[in-house]
Image (tube, rainbow, N blue to C red; front, side, top):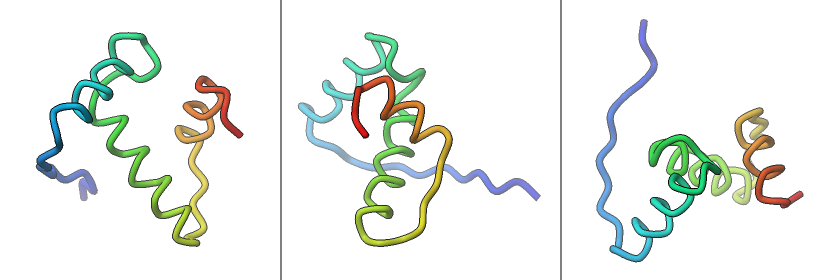
Length: 65
């Protein structure tokens, strides 16, 4: 069974521009990666036990611990 689903969100233009900047600079491969990581970060900040290799790699690229 495939666990991937399509989610559509509306974001302010400046947020989309920031996301596109991350993609253009090579920090992430696509918009979906940014949105997925944002959800993981939010869940983690809410106290959920989230461990993600993808999250660790991005934070390392951004110089965040």
